[in-house]
Image 1 (cartoon, rainbow, N blue to C red):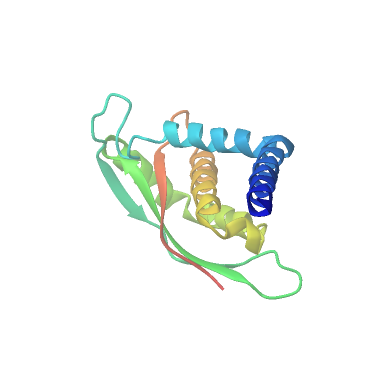
Image 2 (tube, rainbow, N blue to C red):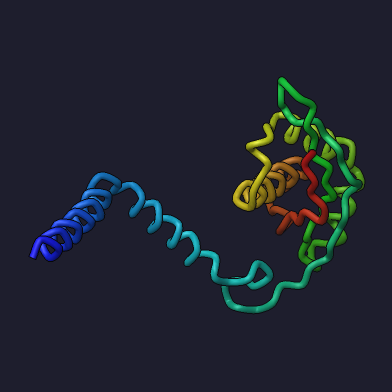
Length: 160
């Protein structure tokens, strides 16, 4: 009989502990639902537009870059090869602008990466953020009303 009582107490304690952890940590449930909604938004492959038609790209590689990160106690750097995905119908205009403004684009990339820390550049989420921010940065530098760079791809991305 004492074993049955101890098992009952253990089951109640485990259940109470589980329930208490759910009550005291409500932020985790909302974070999970936020992550799920982000995943729902990105169900289409990147090279598919809203109508489902495949986009045709011209891939324009930039020169490799090596830039020191903003780490005060140690020398850390990023070595990256960036490839720009440009829609085929924008290829001629975009490539001309990229070649004409290459020094400004490179300077912008240097400033962008040199202001980042090791924590800012590591991991998949940060690399996805970097791709978006670099795309927006380069599109701003190219000017014009319509963004010419559809995607930024990190062909090589090494952190030392």
